[in-house]
Structures are given as structure tokens and as C-alpha cells.
Image (cartoon, rainbow, N blue to C red; front, side):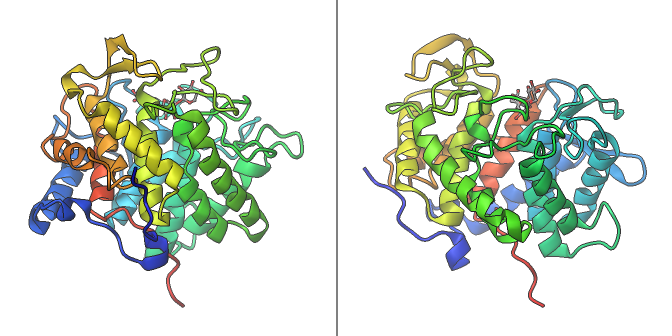
Length: 385
Ligand SMILES: O[C@@H]1[C@@H](O)[C@H](O[C@@H]2CO[C@@H](O[C@@H]3CO[C@@H](O)[C@H](O)[C@H]3O)[C@H](O)[C@H]2O)OC[C@H]1O
């Protein structure tokens, strides 16, 4: 069984272009990245998920649910900073601050996880995957473009303030933190004590440990270690499949959520890939990635299903087969020695962006995987003085 042993890009500054290693021409890879960005952020009705709003704002639409989610907004900002599109980044961030930012109540300092496209809130509660992506996208923006003088474009300050709220809320009886202070695991939502394995991004926490407020850095270092330890207990020992929701001991949570392999779970594979790319990878995670690649090797995207964690297929089909095959391809970065890595990447390369109603989640995962596999999902470090 092979595992990742190389040093990550954070240490070396070198990003692996797995697509090129597998024989695709650099020009074709560049063209695919451009075409994909244009497909999502341009005006092609079949694939677009980004819409401008007014003079200086814009949002990503969950086309399947017809709402605007912190998940999509934070993904859009991460995509924009990777593509050097400050104009798009600023539009999305302005919309987020104008409509989603919660000024009062137990969730003050967080963002409402779902709004209508006109800005009306569907909920006054947050979803922590949005906050963690907002924070790192803002830090990258601060490093890549410099901070604006005024809020909300003072990216670095906004990121540090958000990270502080995420771990310190509740200390004065003012709501709940997004990470459990004792075990350092991210929660599904702040006021519950269980988690979503796909929210665990140790590679983000390593960077928060460098750039958050100094007094918070140890916490983030410990959170990275805690999440790396958590994934091996949450993923099935044979299939590598993770449940959507799980308890802190790794067992699936079927009481308060969905303890089987479904849409949220897909992201675990890509998260393992990006952690390996940035920080070199954990051998235990390489094994999970190998198991996932092996599990899907004989399955066709036309027949992807919901699965029990042991791999038993359920009746219902996957809602996001393009997203699933994309994240499986990104898992190859964590398990490049897997016998199934190349086939997963070739399947991805041969699949176009998804069109139609449910395209948002698939195409987000598709674009992130493309950035990862082409060495374009980068760590933006502080500018040299
Ligand atoms: O109960 C909500 C909870 O649903 C919310 O979670 C967010 C929404 O679901 C997650 O992603 C979805 C995966 O399935 C696709 O079909 C959807 O398009 C995706 O949006 C997302 O990661 C979560 O942020 O969190 C808040 C809870 O109160």
C-alpha cells in the first residue's frame, strides 16, 4: 500500500500538476481552467452559478435549492482569489457582508447560512464550513492584493476577527463557538456537539496557526492535529467512505442527521488531496484515499448511489455524480501510488461541467478539483515588506 511521502507545497513552494504528469498538455490544462472559470462565472446559462447584483455585488446561486449559501459564497471567494479576480471577490464579499452578516443575537459575528437571491434571510444560523472558507479566502486576498483601508475590504482584519469569533464565542455567555474548545473539532453548527467529517480542513488550520491573532495560534495548531486524527476514525476502515454527520468518536450520527455516504461526504476525498498537496499528507489519510479510489473504481457515474458506509448501495441515486467523480479524482493527490488514481483522474478529465438545475454543487467541486489537479490551488503567503 503506497502512501504520500513527499513534502508539501507549503515547504517546497512546488505544486504538483498531476494532470500534466498523466500526459495532458499544459496548453490544454490552461484552457480547461479558463473555460471552467468562464463556465461558472460567465454568462452561459447552462453552467453559470455566479450572478452580479447591482453596482458592486454578486452572488453564487445554489441552483438546486434556489438560495444563496455561505458555502457557495465562500467557495466563490476562494475561486476568485486563486484566479486573481479581485473584482469578483469583492462583489461576493460585499453581498455577503450586506445580507448574511449577523450583527446581533447568539450568532452575532457569524453569517446566516442561507438567503434568497434578493438578500432575504432563510435562517439566522450559520454553517461553519462557510466561515472557515471565508477566513482563508480573506487571508489569501489580504496577502495577494493587500488590505483595503476600509471595511469590508480590509481582508486581513476581517479574517482575524471572524476566526476569533469562531473559537471564542461563548466564553462570555454570548452564543457558542464553532469548534469544541476541549477536543478542538469543528461542529456541524455552533449549538450542537457533533460534526460533519467534510468540514475538517486541517490544511486550513495549519495556515490559521500562522496568520490568526497570536494568542489563537496554538489552538489552530491543535485543531489541525485533532482533525487529522479524526478522519481515520470517521471513515470506514474498508471503503474509506465518511458519513455526512458523525459523532466526536467517529461513529455516524443518524439521530440528528444523515449517517451515511451522501452529498456532504464527497468533499472528504478532495480535502485529503489538498492537505497532501499543501502539507505532504498523513499516511493514514493516504490509506483512506486509496480505499475510496478502490471503492469507486468499478462503479459508473450513471449509477452512483447513496451508500451505507460499508459500501452497500442504497436505492436512491447520487444527486451530484459530477461532484463525486471530481472529488474522487482529487483524492489521487493523497494516493498517487494507487492503482486507481490515473483512471479516476482520466474520468474527471473526460467529464464536462454539469448543466441544468443541480449544477451548483457539482460544478463547485469540479472547479476545486481542477485547480488542485493542475497545481493551481495555491497558498498565498504574506507579501514581502
Ligand atoms: O440544517 C442546516 C444545514 O443543512 C446547513 O448545511 C449546509 C447545506 O448543506 C451542505 O452542502 C450541500 C450539500 O448538498 C448539496 O445538494 C447542496 O447544494 C449543498 O449546499 C453545506 O455544506 C452546509 O453549509 O448548515 C446549517 C444547518 O442549520
